[in-house]
Image 1 (cartoon, rainbow, N blue to C red):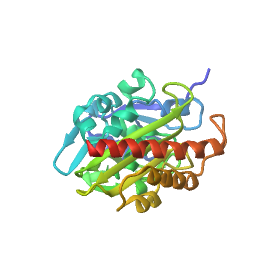
Image 2 (image 1 turned 90 degrees about the vertical axis):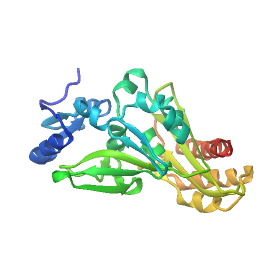
Image 3 (image 1 turned 30 degrees about the vertical axis):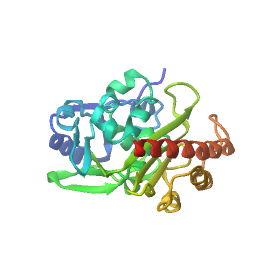
Length: 291
């Protein structure tokens, strides 16, 4: 039987209370909400913490989806099920519903949170790829209520490492809302709900004349970090959507990623998937933008 090392348990009552506990306990403490990634790592002794701070009581404060004319704000404790079921979010960014339909199982989706997914910083994490694709920003709160906003590129420092300090907490994700947009997500997995072999997200914004005003692609499970590919944006912007353009983007994705051969597949196979899934998601994102 695999069991974690002994730890103390604290239950936060407010965001400021949670941050105060982190400030006092330092790197020996870790926040836990769903815990579906953290607890298995602790059982395997790959992660050891003296304190776990339960932030589930903060769901009323940090579990929300708010839309305005220019952005969507999502609280860090918004659960997967809430992201899946939100019609407002699906209307603005259908990529979220695409991704949530292939994340784990109902038990995980009922407890796991957006903030927990991003803070785990697993290179195979679906929602990290989604937020990278949508050019999201992360709001990090520290002691005294001080807040800073960082891009997804700066948020993920490396595998399982983020820009959140020992005495800080991710509180909100902000996604710019622009007209003429469409988005989509595709994932290849060995079985339903499994980690991705490779997954891809695409977001496209069309100009009034039907050309691509901007486009973004994000990959997961295709290298040591969740990958955004600026070269694809440069190649697509200003051109009319066409199969030849999608093929060009797929080729860029394949050569830009850095997958490893493992039990899920060879590096060559994963590059093939990066190519194919990039083309599929761009095609569907454009269809949605047009509609």
